[in-house]
Image 1 (cartoon, one colour):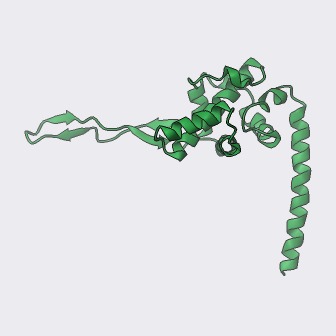
Image 2 (cartoon, helix red, strand yellow; image 1 turned 120 degrees about the vertical axis):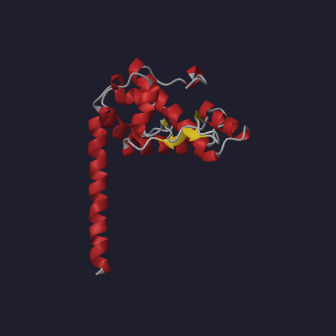
Image 3 (tube, helix red, strand yellow; image 1 turned 60 degrees about the vertical axis):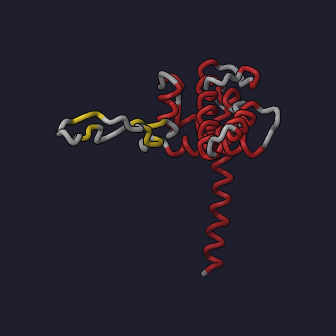
Length: 178
């Protein structure tokens, strides 16, 4: 029985290789592929997966809408904002509204951008501005998971910007506003 399962697994590996080749061949037909692949953390596979999901960057008015679509946007919601005092009056209580990331998102895109952030963080390039920003966030007391989320958002913003402008990514142009 285990031999049969291993044969199935071997067949699936071969199919996966063929599917990757066809996916990359199709992605290379589009001129924007050569632009997006220059973004940090994105390789051939991630770029080829990203393009058919997003289709066009003009679907999104700004980077925050793109972040929300990718599952990287922060949700601000609250309930029970009013409490009763001892006098019986209702007053509004200031509460923290940040409740985490949105639940309504494209899981493939979130996987792509979080993986790209992991790649940028893992290669530890001293001259890479995104890695330097990650280190600054950690040195400033930011938790590692939130710093990684920030880098993911920056990469998503870079992809959106580069795709719209059709210009190759230049790390020297990276601003801290993203």
